Image (tube, rainbow, N blue to C red; front, side, top):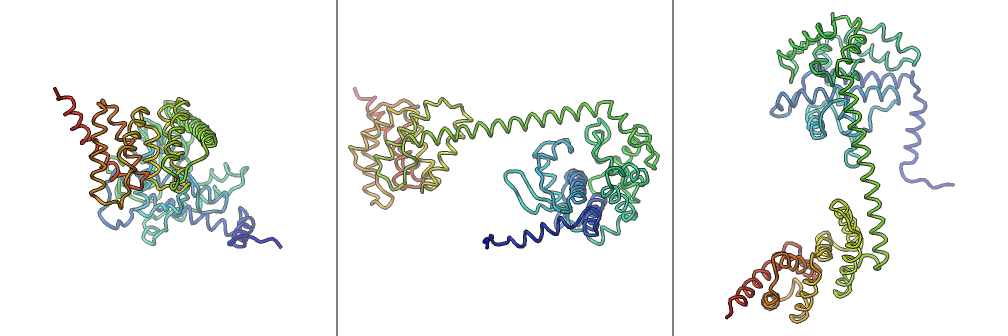
Length: 447
């Protein structure tokens, strides 16, 4: 008998139940109705804020995000039977016609309002989301909610060859919500997603001027634009044709440009990922050549030799700034895997990338004269004596500012390898540098 991991039976039961719940089963219909009801009600009502309400601009942005994201969740629920949606913040950039930070801010406000819930974060920007729980007050605040929900659910669950016929029989509020994906609502010079919310609220029996984030001026302007730009008469007749005609005036072109920009961004990200993998593969080759990442318990001489070989081989790769950062992150990760703490790994890499290897070798010679680098538990008097003598020797080298910075990095790395915390190591190295500068000044002023 095959042994399955914990939770296997639970997952199998969930999968079988999901398959069993076909498109027209009561379970899927109930889940779709629940999602649509929450989507419409959240879009057309005001939340109860736990503290001071956000700025009205933030509320308006969160409302448009809920409108767009709620539609996606409801459609996904009708299609798959799952009330949660795996998406990315980047997927909302084009429909909301805004930047990534703006999407993040709107999502944060929508979560605070209880309109959207982020169930789980996935990777850098992926997330599993669902609509927030619907309160009784929200249900009662939308007089036409039941009718709108029933009409949208019929469209979402209709067979493909019946969708047009079902749409022909729905009311104005449902018709407006079904037009949500049209380019005009996001990319027209005058119409907007907020204008769409105003029209939906009117059709559903809600006063849009009472919705947070929507001003009376916005309500007036949206109603006027609907009449002049879309020939809106409150019935929804001819809405699709009017939107198509309006889109030809510029919204289509702007939408296509946004899609092209997003596709170009995706291509750049894919290329960067491919390049990052190439750099990681190259680092693997380098480490194979020099014997892998050293243990923090290895002899200092062996670690120094490894750092020299690493600097030489990585330097020969001729990496640009972005590639060098990728290589450094990968090397730090490998050192941590080999047992180094994060600060120790960073310190070791700082030593390995010292700008002037001659300076590093000179520091090594001076260190041999002063004895081994003291450990953190060494008597303070001995540490001070070691630092003073090393500062005197370095002061006689007459280093220029660039070489002095290289010496500081090298000293910090050596101290970190001796188990000093990075901040303390940098402080001691700074003290040695100041001492050496004093000695250097005396040397220069001698007759």
